[in-house]
View: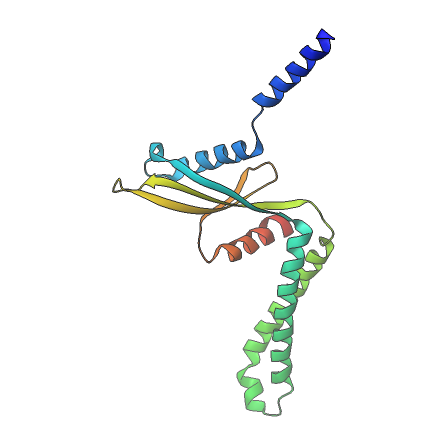
Length: 180
């Protein structure tokens, strides 16, 4: 009986010594921020919020919907110009039409790649927001807000200042690093 109790105590002790995923995430963020900070020792974390875990299939579906809307607009535009009876209008838009057709082809190829990944339940990335206090070059303490993408082990994959462009940066990250 004593052996069983000691075994449970040992397991409890080992489990309590292991870092939580959130602690690992916060350590990775702190190391990353300190690397680029003007005054690294001024770093003071405020909040770290895990926003969502995004699967490859889920994000592929979102991009596919956006791409299909864009394809429809581009095809309508090309169709209107090509079906025009005004030769001047057709000649004036010739280069634009060729560019649009090239973009249509590029989107169709991307859509094929996306469709192959629709059923994937693998984690594409985890979206995280982090706020901290840092001293700037003038030694004034400021609040910094970051938008971060990590892998499932909380290794940082994209680290940006939080702004309106973050969703576009996320799509770009997905296309370059996951969709390939």
